[in-house]
Image (cartoon, rainbow, N blue to C red; front, top):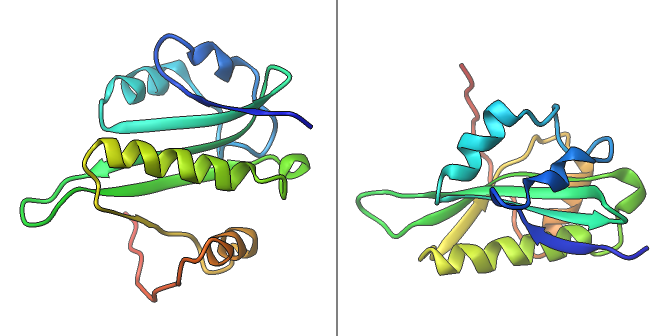
Length: 137
């Protein structure tokens, strides 16, 4: 299976017209995509195979007044058929490189404790889990 990594912006958002199941948590809608892409410190990168988006990763540069910017990796999804091909690692690397161009000196990602695939991937690329509470409202 061949695939390529594409950084999505306003000029090539048409790639998101054809998305494999299980890549995003919900349907991509232009009323949310357009303002997302308009933000200079938001990033969406996808993997495309034969015109079909098979994976995605997205992040936000997180600014603080008392420390350098960090990259918050908000979401990563790879269609099951395309897992274990190096796509997630390639997306992750591309996103970290983009973060460096934005002055990020670190990054962070959170996932559910029962996300076996996600936790396995993050451990495989050398990340160590930290215990934390997550509150949602």
